Length: 616
Image (cartoon, rainbow, N blue to C red; front, side, top):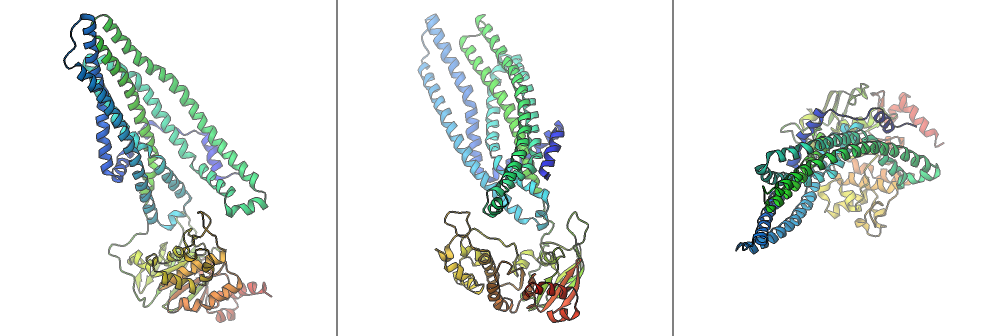
């Protein structure tokens, strides 16, 4: 049984990702915006860290300079019996102080790194949540968007290392420049030899870093499948069928197959990196020891002093290490920057449905209601019209039921009237004005929607109900009143902590509810919402017959004086509507109240009789 992820794996095996060098270098354009993210996370800590790293970068040269003077003074004193300089012991003390300062700076830099990483994670996570909340519903219905969002989410956490890398690169560059200046003053050729030997290693590291990103990018669908398989094999929702249908071995086998392919691809790249990296490491080693041998020869020949030899040997060792480190760190930053492409691409996704400048406030009260005028709709990327030239009105105080087989556009109408979608053709009017002329937030404030797949918030019972109108989260009277009206109060009172009881099983101490009890909680949100337009999508689907009867005894109270749009497959529910619209092939096929539609003996009557036959 092949899956999309498996197909991706096979394609990846056949043609390993290998982006061109020019394309790789384009990723460096990501660094400025990422640095901006880091700065926005905490400017004060960024300034502190930069200052500390610059000072720390100058420590090696300072200590080498002091060591050179100390060694030359000792050599002159022991070889030629010259007295020690008067400042000799002060120099020894200063070397000790410099070592202590260097150690302290290292601790302070580590503290800044950790603090800034926490700040960055918090900052970027909030930005991700904020941006995701602005995107359209249709965006979330695009499978490719989930890959992009998943990569952005992962990279926002995994790329915290980039903060430390940027700071380290700055410190390594300053250290390298200071040590290279000392070598350059003695011999330009020594410095150029060091750089020439390190450059191939840098290019190789860059090459494999980008190969690693390209591989990781192509593996995203497969890794999403692995996450999904883990959920299926270890969730309370799936455990019943897992056991009863004997699915454990199938899911484990599927996970094993996909993860094994990922492992083989990653191992193959790692082996190549190991071989090439080892060979180039030998070249780098030769680049260090050749200049080192040269200064030993100069010392033995009496051209330079032992102190100068010590200084140059330390400078060459430090410069060689730091030049390698600069290239390696830069390569790692380029790698991190390439991964950050996913984060920046996510932020580049813009909503199609936006507020009109100076949008109108939603009318309160609504006077003439909603009107669908020749509304057609198709999903992005699909030419098939879900709705075709739909026309109807919903007046204040009127209750309309939408019925029809699955896929006929009932939920699409709900999403259009709430402006989660926008019509492909036609207009939706509210009090005679186009819905797009209104401020979205103001519009949503006048709507209460309970979908069939309503959210089960793993929070307290009180917080669950308060989601209907979050501004009333501290108004215990209104929350309890809503629970009473929806018949959820009885179930809540039986909980150990009542309205303060955490619901669900995700957190310790939480208690789960039955499907019907959860649905009553969701209905309580609708009561709390107290909106002018109430939309109920299968509001009693999880209720037993007695509970359904009790809910609908209060349904008239819930919808009194309001516009109500009701979707239901239960005709006992539908009969309570003032008007019933039957959708077929994306169009309004029949319209009227229950008795009128039964008299027509059309599609509605046929569906009603089929359902009624099940109870005879």
